[in-house]
Length: 178
Image: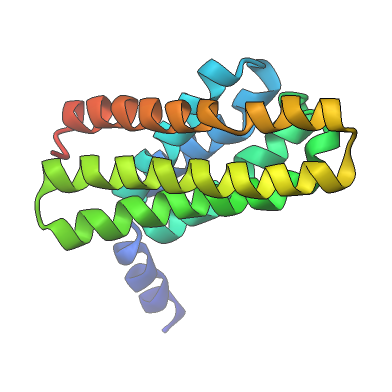
């Protein structure tokens, strides 16, 4: 009986999707340790979130949405004074993924739904992160540093989210997913 259960479980495992998920998650985890440039790391991480969404599903993408900010903090890309903002960064990543997923599903059109989702997801991510981090930094850190931090979490987040959508689109087209 146990062998039959093992066979059933193994039949249901999509090895290709699992491999893609693990590879992309590995990049999302370790990239912030090696690359300390927001303009490169941000678009790559956002692209990875979208790729995992379309290759492994929304649940997997939501799990990975929680990882990069912790790794950015641990790897030094995110200043230590921003540690209280990490939960808000995680939520903004989840908003990004969920927006793309829902709008893509609602649109029934792979091309326009994808781009509408990326645009709305990027705007929601930016707005949520900017408002929440602006509020937190005013409470926790010096005013001059708060302005610099709020700037880091404002329009660059919008641009890196949009660039991540462009990168993911190119890869998904290459993989013939669209």
